[in-house]
Image (cartoon, rainbow, N blue to C red; front, top):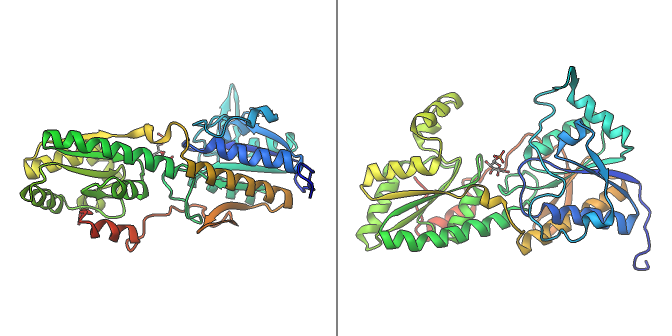
Amino acid sequence: MVMGEKRTSVTKTFGILTAGGDCPGLNAAIRGVCRAAYNRYGMSIIGIANGFTGLIEENARLLKPGDFSGILTQGGTILGASREKPFKHETYEAGDIVGDKVLAIKDTYHKLGLDCLVLLGGNGTHTTGYKLACEGLNIIGLPKTIDNDIVGTDRSFGFHSALSIGTEAIDRLHSTAQSHSRVIVIELMGHKAGWLALYAGVAGGGDTILIPEIPYDVNIIARHLKERRQSGKHFSIVVAAEGAMSIEESRMDKKGRKKYRLEHGPSTAYRIAREISDETGIESRATVLGYVQRGGIPSASDRVLATSLGTAAADLLARGEYGRMVALDGNDIVSIDLSVPEGKVKAVPLDHYMIDTARAVGTCMGV
Ligand code: F6P
């Protein structure tokens, strides 16, 4: 095969969109898909704006090589994103027109002459993608999220960048907590799965790590923090996922938990800091890292993963292998059926080695 020689492709024209929360690495993935599809297979590429909203509104444009050049290190997504869930809120209003979102998406797909739709997204995006595939559209997915909670892939791009950001923040909190002999609770993203808090907590040397999968007992945390003080460590760092909850909260239903959080403060970090202060009498503070974890340039690891997943998606397009999500399996890039991640969340297994690693170095996991 001569360098630059075009290869044959089943797919001639495809659309590409980014949906759900943004993350570092999205543009690297877009670049990987588009450069391989254009340079190796001569495909035409339609960029869809703002996730599934762009399909509903027919907001799309032909991408040219200049559009997907020089974006490897750029944060965010050149296409824009939204959290539109067309199957959840199925109708929309445009002026006096009330339309069916799924029909609008299918209409746009055919009007644009797409052979396939490439989706870069998390759990919600792949659930929508699977349902669109069941409606007859050709779909290929790439796993994106800082939460790393997509079933079927060992890692999603965005996770390593957020892990670096969270770890640096924890490092910085050590000096100020030590200077003031305080407990500082840092809240990292991760509503349903605690991968980011667990890994950043281990990387940053958090003394306590709280994840949604392990509801905590504040008395056990208090005992751990008091023992630290008695051993001469007059400061502590508590790393909490935004979805972390007490044992009491875990016994509530969704409505009860919402009411509880409205009464006790919506932010996990502030609630836990107050509980710790009440239990131990130690001065405590809270930091919510928030959207900083999703901003800025991708880590080298995420650039490599995003690019590899992107070029693998281009190969699937060329072979006409639709209804798949590209994924990381150990050190290999594979593809799995779209039904695998559909409707699921990859939570941290309670026997995961990283939990034992944390405990082995003396970290309190809240129970
Ligand atoms: O994309 C995942 C995520 O960052 C979660 O960790 C977080 O809870 C959520 O998105 C925030 O959603 P939004 O961007 O809609 O505020």
